[in-house]
Length: 268
Image (cartoon, rainbow, N blue to C red; front, side, top):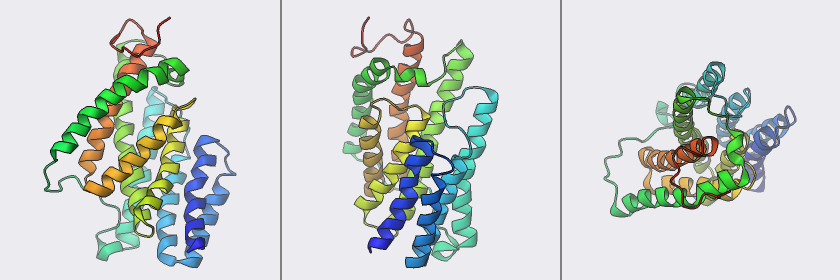
């Protein structure tokens, strides 16, 4: 049991070195070691850790700092797409998990209507983001981790980029990492492990300074919500609503005359 957890911690913990500390190639040592240990103690676990490691390795092949240039957006599109598609394809066509259906799935149409509590939470996400994000981004200066916005084209690119990465976060960290880990560990443990990868990625993306005080609970809550409702549509809705506020705050940070609607924004 200890060795199984150690293997998963090595793989997921390597994200801290790969993305947060940006210690490459050192970060690949625990990544590979975790996969090898997993294969030795539990072959099924090792195979699924290898899928997670493959996705992480693909993501680590590009710089993750926000980049609104043509080349930057192409790099993000290709690398992040492959990080999801490769584990999905390997699980389905090579490992033939679940009789060929694959262990990586994307439950969009679940057939279940969202409850009143779920709708209330969506509204709460917007309110929380509205109150909390301006002090973080503007007070800490973290908004400067995103490129300056030189006109309408850059603002439009930021909108597309923020939403695309938000969608990808749920596809990879929840539908790939969290889902595979849940096959071998209790939900609570799997959630903590996926959060290690999620938060490390967000750090390199730009959520630095005291950002982890926001991103750690966000990652854990997203995992809990998915475990409870089994709905990709819902966790994506939560994430994109939050990201809508992120986008607005970033625009206001770079252009204070725009979207000056935040009552908690620090004033000069």
